[in-house]
Image (cartoon, rainbow, N blue to C red; front, side, top):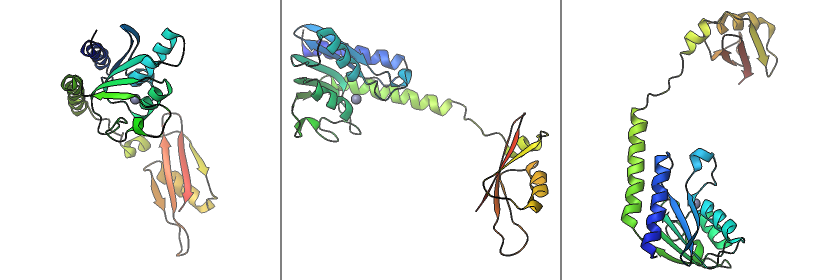
Length: 228
Ligand SMILES: [Zn+2]
């Protein structure tokens, strides 16, 4: 098969990622005419910064071939590899990398830096821009859709502090990080039931104001008191 056909497969994996709500990046690794590794971005689902398409494909290829040296393989990926993935490519001794879209923010194969031209012990050959238009369009469409979703999603609103605290009729617990003068306690109890956070200025010119944060829910009302 030709490069185009393999990049098309990587694109298919990228589309799969997009349908799953992930940034669409897909990758295939080929040895001869055999696909030995496939991967796609799964950062959101896996809740992992490591779940990039290339890392998944390299892991699978190592398992398929029974070793960490992928020195007869070509890696096809829809987006320029980041520093982590370019590092993994060097570590796996992959001799040839073909990518579609460039990544101006995170690309480590020429855009932000060129890890492969640095003084490491392995220098993969890189071909960039294969099916660039399709790869870029997929990313553009994904982020455009995401922006629309975020714009129309109802915004979370913080409940009114005044209302929260005013409803509190549970006993107050007072946590102090420094000693609070005894004459403040009744004022704190009184103010704490009305508003939070607030500052109490003690009587006298030399005294330091106290910052008070109140936390209230149905079972507990906490006041945290700290000096300036
Ligand atoms: Zn990466």
